[in-house]
Length: 210
Picture (spheres, rainbow, N blue to C red):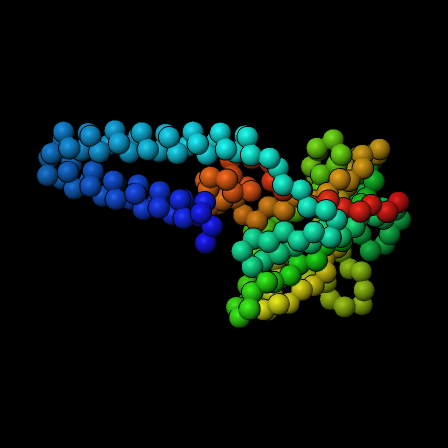
């Protein structure tokens, strides 16, 4: 467990204890005690929120080189490359005037030793060199005779599989990398977490092919 996770869990426990004591004091009509505890709760939660936002704003953004592996616990993703897919019949996305179709190649893998797992709420965006982001226009696209597996497919211990994601990107925009969203909560409230409030999530850089 990371130190930031420990701080978050300890903070949750502290808040629950305070809420319980406030409720007990209110039931006993000990309003002065309940008021003091409520003020303590407000100071603590306000201070935590302030630290969370300040760290999110000032913490440098992480960047992985092409082929670098980002892990969320034991679930990992590696960004490999992106290439134009003009005229490809394998891309099932509606045409968008003024846009190019880029296909990003990634590898989903598990670092777990025993358990099977899946990332049910994961989504990936493509970020261009100006910082604009674009959602995938389809969950996956076929690249071989084998069945295509989605990002959210279950992984066995140490297993990996490839995924190809298509993105509609405006003309002249060039992909810089991918941003992985591994669910919004509870990371949004963990101080120093990669996806905490006001913090820019890590960028997995892509090697691009025309």
